[in-house]
Length: 369
Ligand SMILES: CC(C)=CCC/C(C)=C/CC/C(C)=C/CC/C(C)=C/[C@@H]1[C@@H](COP(=O)(O)OP(=O)(O)O)[C@]1(C)CC/C=C(\C)CC/C=C(\C)CCC=C(C)C
Image (cartoon, rainbow, N blue to C red; front, side, top):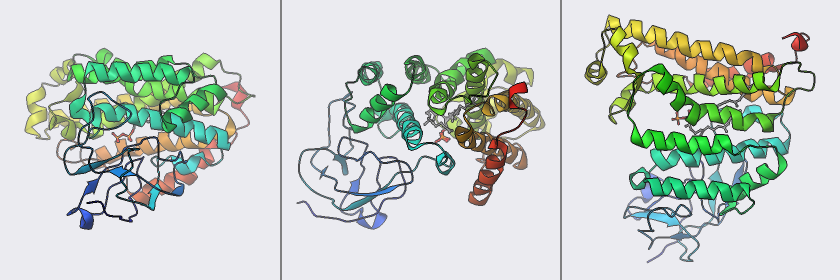
């Protein structure tokens, strides 16, 4: 019944897709689990994976494994070998190369936080989102407490436990991100920007707060830590607002509108206009205002970015410049984010790296900011 297959995955985070040609036999979906070696994004590791094809069902809420629809296989530790000699390439978005100036310890820590955030997001947005319930989120939160108390459940949790041991991380933003996922499952409309801001804080501002203790503050910085944490929070908010503006059409197809309802109304717009997908003058005017607001948050973040430890600034500037370019791309699409998804091409993305590098260089006037 079991065959040995050998394949190379597309870059992914702990999830491997068997090439189409093998789909006749099995679609293997490997979700991060204890047997995946902890590797830094971008690195390529040979590893042996045990895939148990027989597992189609795992108790709901058991986050250590994954629940698979039929014809998908779960990576487990049960023994039946389907695939071996898999090349696992882990990548973590375009910011990964720019972390190279950071110490190995810091790189690993950012990666551990990234993986935890990604897994948290996948609970509501990933392939197993259908199994989401308040019990799942409670269990995930208990597991977070265990991570912080040095009792990791799997290798990926262990990477975060290690990070908690090495850096002064506060559990609050992690808990708050879970709260954001809770909010996302309960709510599909936001009355005002105040409500939307809270959501953005939960799911993205928190990422900034988690990252600063790892990235470190420049010893020569004369700005208060409070100001720097605020800037980190604003970068997360700006990123999330940008994601929202980029994905309006996509979110609408899932019945979700992450736009302030009162502001839509001020422009004579409503959900109906979002679902009808017609880019009118009113829509364009509304979008212009939303883009101005997202840029405002990026401007607020800029100053903090220059106060971080010098080796940590590059990835932060990369993220800032890249997300700004997404806003530019929405404008270039004539504000059509209802039928189009603004896209920053590979070359443009790569070009952000040297630009971000130059912005990250130490500036003589740092202490006067
Ligand atoms: C260097 C750097 C950018 C470090 C952060 C790395 C990190 C830990 C990222 C975690 C991101 C993540 C998976 C969050 C889960 C929730 C989520 C999906 C949020 C959205 C991210 C974008 O993800 P993506 O584009 O992959 O989403 P889609 O697949 O397109 O749906 C968010 C928009 C949030 C991203 C927020 C940040 C990257 C915050 C960055 C802030 C800092 C690193 C602090 C910088 C410090 C100062 C002082 C400015």
